[in-house]
Structures are given as structure tokens and as C-alpha cells.
Amino acid sequence: MERILVTGASGQIGSELVPALRERYGAQNVIAAGRATPLAPDVLESGPSTRIDVRQYQDLDRAIKEYEIDTIYHLGSILSARAEGERGLGHEVNINGLFNVLEAAAQNSLERVIIPSSIAAFGPGTPADNTPNETLQKPNTLYGISKVFGELMGGYYFDKVGLDVRGVRLPGIVSWKTEPTAGTTDYAVAIFYGAIRERRYTCYLRPGTYLPMMYMPDAVLSLVQLAEADVAGLQHHADFNVNAMSFAPEELEAAIRKHVPDFAMDYDIDPLRQSIADSWPNSLDDSAARREWGWSPKFDLEAMVDDMMVNLGRKLAEG
Ligand code: SER
Image (tube, rainbow, N blue to C red; front, top):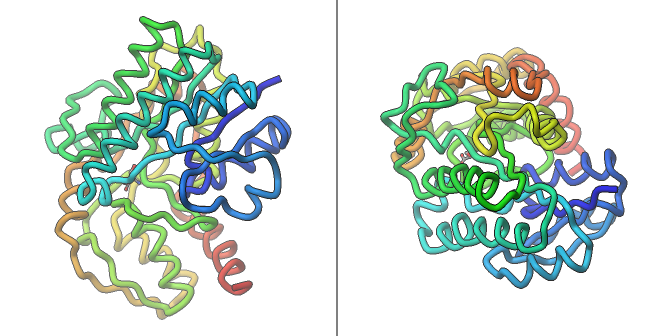
């Protein structure tokens, strides 16, 4: 019987991963952990939860022992744009916090730790199109540097400490349940709120800015599928590219306009987020993930937009 701890459970991904894991492994076996922000009501009500600040080793150690944890999904993180403005916090959470998670997992002999990396682990010198799994990684954001740290430490703990660490480099994630904040790819979610509420949206990235993107059900699938993969088949550990779709703002606008014919988008470029987006890949080569653990996404742009319009439309109508 697996006992799972999820950090960052109130975030964009955590708030959807927790219900999916509870469905799969039993509600009582999935412990949702957050820091300051209150956990979403359905996450709180549907199973156990605890307060963890990943900057505090003792918080992690206590929760692991108290709930007899054997797997951690470590999603707690300060996203790219915010970490540029709050370097101290970004360092404490994304680097010290990650180290605490790995070390607490090793000290307590856990079975497995899942730590998502990101397209942010690449940088301006990386080939941007169909970016290979193995390539130049010199990110120029604090968030991206912390993701490379996580990838390397994942391999280190696997080889030197015998802790099974796994992770995918997630693209920008589109979802309707919890709105992301503080990231560079957030426009691809905010645009739906604008389209449904006001039939207009002002985009902070330039037209032509291609980024790898993924719909939330595929993001959850990628994490769970990798976590369950037979370790004997894995040559990589915490550094798998996973691709699903790639689009520029005007292409997402056109796809939404099929649902909202008078949707209007204009631009007010944010230099910080534009420069971050420009340093990230346009699309990823994910053949290693396909080969080693059978990765295959289900949603393309059109299917994602259809589903977003229905579900976000319903959520906003219900208030
Ligand atoms: N979605 C994240 C961000 O924009 C990338 O991992 O910061």
C-alpha cells in the first residue's frame, strides 16, 4: 500500500494531482501539504492534509514519520517570474526546499520522490526547436537554475544515495481549476478567463512567441505514469522532456475565437516575461520519455480549448 505526500497541494498542479492520486490510491493514502495559502476546499475535505513549509527540514521529517510516507510528489515551488523579483524566497524554496525534500526522503529511506522539472531548465543557448533531451542547459533565470539543480540532484541521489528520484520537464500547463500565478506561461490560462468574462484579453507576450504547452490531464498523467514506470527501463531520472503541443499567443487566440467569435486580443508586452519566454524552447523532443516509459499525450490544441471552454465556462457561471 502506497502512502503519498504531495507538497504544493494548493498550487495549479497540486490541486488537481491530489484528487487524481486519491482516486487511484485511496483518499486516506494521499496527504496534501501546503504552506501559507489555504488548501482548496475539496482537497481539504477529501482526505488528510498537513502544513509543511519545505524550507523547514523538520516539517518534512515529521510528516514523513507521522503519515508513514513512502512516496513524495514535490510540487511546492516559486515560479519563474516571481522568483526573479524575490530571489531570496526563490532560493530558499526552490533550492533549499528541494534539498530538504531529497534529504528527508533519503534519511527516511523512502521508495520514491517525484520532482517536476520544467522547460525553464533550458536557456538562450539551447536549440529552440524540437529541443533534444540532452543538450546545452544554461538557463538565465533563478527558477531555471533551480530546476537544473533538481535534475542533477535527482541523478545524484539515485546514483550515490540509492533514492529513486524521477521527474519530467513540464511545459506551460493550461488548466481551469486553480489559476496559476507568478509564471511566464500563465497567459495561456488567463486568456480563457478574459475570453469568457469580457470577450477580450491583453497579452503580455509578443505574437510569434512559441512555447511548449500541455493540458492538465496530460500533466497529471505524465507524473503518475513516470512514477509507476519500471525502474529497470529508465535510463534517465529527473530530466525527461515531455511534449504535447506548441503554440504562439495568436494561435491560441484563433482557437478560442471558434468558441467566442467576437473575442478580441491586444498586446502590452511585459519585458521580464517576454525575455524569459524568449530563453525557453519552442517545442521539445520527447522521444526518451516515449521510449523509456511509454509517454503519449492525449490533448492537442483544439481538444484542450474545447474542454477549457466547457469547464471554465461552467466554473465561472457557478461563481
Ligand atoms: N509554467 C512555469 C512558469 O511559467 C514554467 O515551469 O514559470
